Structures are given as C-alpha cells and as structure tokens.
Image (cartoon, rainbow over the protein chains, first blue to last red):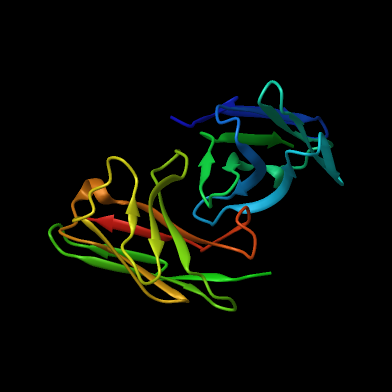
Length: 112
Length: 115
C-alpha cells in the first residue's frame, strides 16, 4: 500500500545549525507534499509545501526540495532556534483524491 | 485562512461509555471531512473519511460500529466512540479540505482519556 517513510525519528541540533529531515514516498501518483509542525497537544501547522512540478521552494529559514524521480523530498531548516523544537511531519497527497499519507514524524530538539 | 474547530478539546470518560466529538468548519463548507487518531509520539493515522449525505468511508482495520461518524451538514461532522475502552485513549483530530483537493485544514484536536 501507499506509505511515506521519514527519517530521522529524532534530531538534536545546536542553536544556529541546520536541520534536515527526509521523506520517501511510494505512490508515484502523489503530486503535493506538505510539511507540518506540531507542538505537544496542538494541531499540525502547515509550514511549507511543494507541488510535483517544482523542485525547490524556500520561505525564509525553511526550504523544501523534491526529487520526483527518486520519490524523495526533504525539509531544510537553517539557523535553527529553540522555538523550532517540535515534531515535524511530512505528507504525500495523491492527485485526484483528498487523502494524505503522513510520515512517521521527526522530533526536533534545538539546543540553546 | 479557513478555520476548523473541534469540541470538546479534551474529555475524560469511564470505560464502557460513549463519547461524541464534533468537528466544524467555521467559515466554509465541507462536503468531506477526515478523522485522524494520533497516539503519543506517533503519526496521524487516518481513521475515516466523512461524507455529507452518505456513509463514511473507513480505513482498513477501523471498526465502523465502534467509531460512528455522522456528517449532518456541510459544516459539521461528528465522531462517536462507542463503548470506549482505555486503549481508545488518544488524540483525535479532524480536518477539512479547502477549495482544492490538496490543501487541508486541521482542527485543534480532542484528547480522549478513557479510565
């Protein structure tokens, strides 16, 4: 079935360093890839997304890259800050459906 | 942006009782809504797709007789956990799609604790 693998499951970085989280999807019909940040007990918040016709997108300290051939997409956070600490989920959306398949999540800790 | 609300935000109930959770789209209509369950330190798992005016579609392994879904109007879907047990304790989140099929708006979640 469809699945999205996400790595690493936990990530600790020093404040100011960069963090990279990687996802791999299985459904070649996926065409939209959002990234969510979730703080404890809160709803997932969309932080950036990318569509399959684009290879890279950047929004200030956050960027996402997509390699459609390899079915990989990655989240890059530069100049990390303690408030970036949270759980991050990637997701893949299949064209023509409403369904999201979520990755397993990455717990990011930014150490001050 | 679009807003989705959930009620209650948290609930504690005794084993064997039923609990109803509401999901509302506040400023837009949603013919489809989604119910997710999230156990501690785990990902969001889609439970079912709620369809206004028709039966819900359940994911494999989700008991439709235990998790009753009713999409009463274009702005309200309800999830009823029947005969709740401690293993049903979880964070339940709903979502509704926007005008395009790829965007989704998440509710704030409901934390259910079954004693």
